[in-house]
Image (cartoon, rainbow, N blue to C red; front, side, top):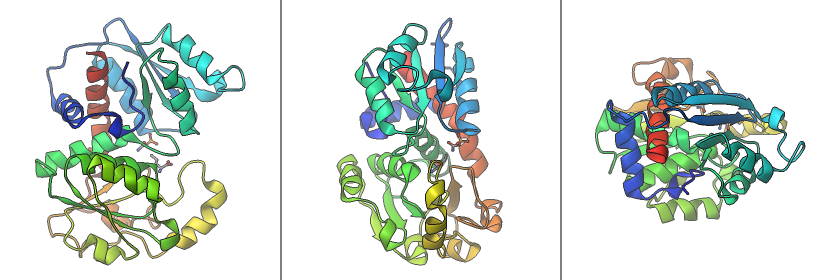
Length: 294
Ligand code: CP
Ligand code: NVA
């Protein structure tokens, strides 16, 4: 049984297969007569709606379920919820507060589990990010992706995916928000080798893609003041973008906080690919589900 908790659950060939399916227009309707559970312990615009449409496009029935209704470890154990949902659904996809919830569901080996975002990773976002870059550049091997901001769930999955595909990775973040050695070891094991600095301008110099995400992720409201202070000076502005290759694209998983991690001018400017990224969430969800169920 296969699960997708992080991109490195896939081999490089499997990652390429999923990306090819994501771009295909002639997929078999592999979910006809079947259901996919979409469980959310946190809010979502893109992941829920792209997921629902992807299941529909494969002929299946998407079931949106609020995490609070299931009550992980409150109403019953995570494991018992997974085993119960396995009786109805072909795949269980979940956005969770704690990554360990996904690991415990997967450990029951009752149904394929897909991570729709945890505190640690966001592999479904990384699939869409890579597809967006492939559509722009073709092969992303040798392309330089500069990430300016918080090395969070989105950064981890993006770094693993882009590293597997041979891209050069750079990160600019304040020193006390640099990634852990275990994060770096995992990215290196996948094939990436991030260059890490505290200087957005040098990280972005000559880059092909400039990426950022919110400074305060869902569930981090208690750290908001500290993080906003720490990351001030790490906004992707037009001045920062001018350091990149003139043909560089700007990327953001969204939701965006214009005026914090990115200026309005950049988010809504000609180099921005944020709406294509958002649309690609549906195409890559369909590609992933086709691979899992096909
Ligand atoms: N990028 C992303 O996952 O968006 P949502 O939180 O709206 O699903
Ligand atoms: N890092 C953000 C991503 C949202 C899609 C968060 O976890 O809130």
